[in-house]
Length: 308
Length: 329
Image 1 (cartoon, rainbow over the protein chains, first blue to last red):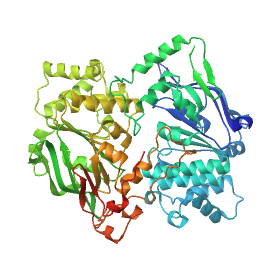
Image 2: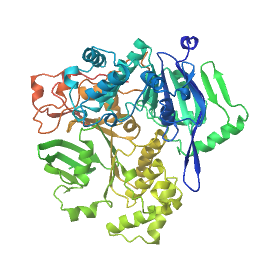
Image 3: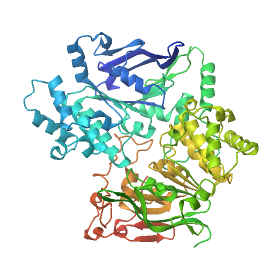
Image 4: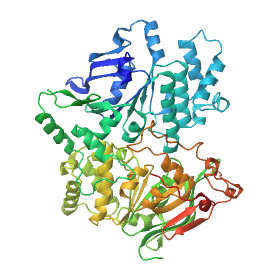
């Protein structure tokens, strides 16, 4: 694996996030538990999980929108919790950016879309002189016609166009890590492929690395080099995408793959499929493998065999 | 009309009548639902698939029925008054709506919601009725105790099951399921979709129309597929035929843009469809896909006639014969 020899851009170690709620009776919810992984240049890492698994929480901690309860995130070896000054934080955001599911909520409807580019220049690159030319170049790179995009309002553009626009913005800033949280979930089948292909091309060309957060297993398989499966706050299985998909070990991963609707392969009609059953299977699996913890089943494949 | 047809929709047009003009969301749609089948209706956002469901079940302004018929066992439901149709709704035709998960009132327990609903339809919810509800709850692997719970206490997948139990409680002959799997996790998707098949097999429901953007789910459960684009039906046929031998350029492009487990970008690059669907406001005649279609000619400016390739497979495209059947997947 060529990427391992390189330094990771970002590495995450034993990350845990516990949310508390309630005033008189405090209740604690563990959203993310003991998560570790690293991201290397030019790779796409997909983080797959169902709703409530904590995948978005990880993305939000990487973007410094949430503070981890314990554990650390190192960006080029430096703990991001230590980035205190404005200048340091600005530098971090110049390199680490996020794109979210709903493109319409990323834009202020009262302003023309050009504003997102102006803000990038004003905040991160005030020294740049040829703003217009650079913006146009970035837009062309994401297959948008600048004349049909610039000086329009968000509601005049489609969801796919807005997502491309946000990718163009990331290109402008030389982003190293892009946290793409359900980036294409709101887009139609016919438009999302263009965006995915674009994202992959950009990674190959610029060395940008993407954390592709999704619930869609088929899309995850299509784009990613590495896959992480998340369940109830823990990474239960991770490794090279083909390895994880074709030789799943953890009962949760197996259950997910059994339920993916795939064209050309029907669900087993004889199997009595009940989603809740997996909880029991996981408990049995952990009990059988007590004390083993995270195990490497092959060089590029880690499985959580038990929890303490 | 053939005896095994339960719903016969003929040249149905339903427009959103707004200040700027008519949005032609359902424009000349013809299809049949046969007894005991699950008909899948697929298309992208804005193709008119949900509008079609609303036209059949609950038309509210600005949505307006313009022309065409929808014969439910020979009776035209488009010509029925609101009162008359209310007698059919829930008991004989039922809809499982999109966003059903948010349809439950947050301040009412599930049981109260069921009571109110069936009262609306003139049924007295007595003990034997609730015995049936509880039996159905167990059938979908829910503890009947959920009847005493508030919606907030249930997960999305559980709420969807509750909605499916309630919508089918009176054993309707036709169920219209509108995007019932879209907001669910993959495991709950499989459960909800399979449940619809099981309900049919147990004879609880007769036929179903399953509307979704997700062709992969339809492949799992539908008997026949109907593909919509821009308010028109472009292709209809048995699932295997549509999926493996699509003839319409849109169906072909749509299917080849779908990711599958086993296909990685480094091995095979899937392409989307260039361009965007047409604006349906005051749209003129012609094939609605022509702007994005590689095969378009002058002739495509006239609305294509729907032709049967074989008795079960129909297509609306001027050029399907030259294009040929491209085998996908």
